[in-house]
Image (cartoon, rainbow, N blue to C red; front, side):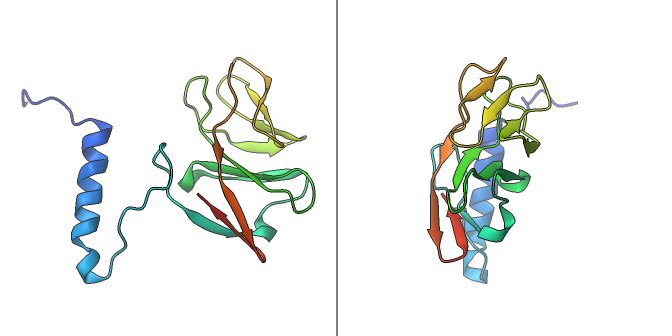
Length: 134
């Protein structure tokens, strides 16, 4: 067994980005981060987001909602209570499975705790029938 400390999340992510950047010359894409939380930008068709509900994109730790037709919102899918990932959108609420927190689809604010703060907002840009999340 080694006496070396386990690598931190930051060290692992930095190493991954360094390897990705090294692959750019071979046609790979670089790590692109568009927010302080380290989220990457991505796009989805508007048809993937149901009116009056939403969709959780676990790979992007993001939940996108459409409270009314053509009104889109995006939030971090990480619950501020204990960092669990929300897993469902139903009954006008975003649900966290760990401790029962619920968030409003219109603004990500807390409807029911134990979370004390709402979900972190992400930027949504609508272009035709595509949503870009930053």
